[in-house]
Image 1: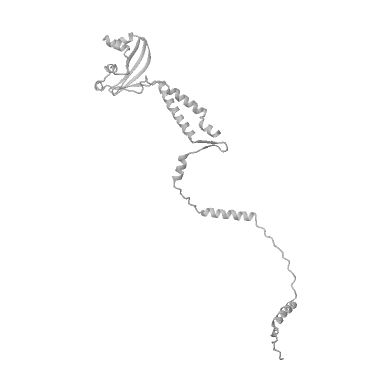
Image 2: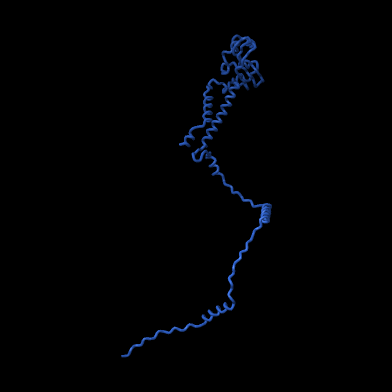
Length: 260
């Protein structure tokens, strides 16, 4: 029961990472305009710094706010210089690099000399995009990093095993299949070189000179040999006994019939 509970219950780090991902994913991105773009192909050939704000103020442009001061100036047929005398949201041309790049800024004007930037938009080849702010960039990078960490934890937990008698270990199925399918190459045994053989002989001779072998002589006690004359007599006696012929065996007497 201990091993099964451990495999199912995630660690504290995994729980923290998952909660962070859920919190960041719970943000409503329906009003976020960072993932969309807008273009009017009819304006693209004639775009220039003089009419780029008119192009940006098209009704089909989702980035344009109809309640801005630019719309008021346009309706009253005034010049853009009157924007400095007004208070509220306005759009200005921040940078122009003809004919490909235009940057438009949305800002909150509080006085003729004080403004608060709200957002930047860049137009590349007639396509309008919203530039991400620093907070959005950090949030997106953090979300990508956390998602990668969560995937790594999930994959690592899938290979983790535990048993009370063995402890923790890693079990990789793909690695076992690769090792089975991998052709086994036989290792060739390399013969010893001439230097190795001579070096070994030198070491053996050195050890033999330092520790010479010791030989022990074993003394065996010999029994006294009998005199030569007694040996000759013993040799002659069995010879004479073997030379004497054995007496012939007599046949049993024949039985004769009695005469009456």
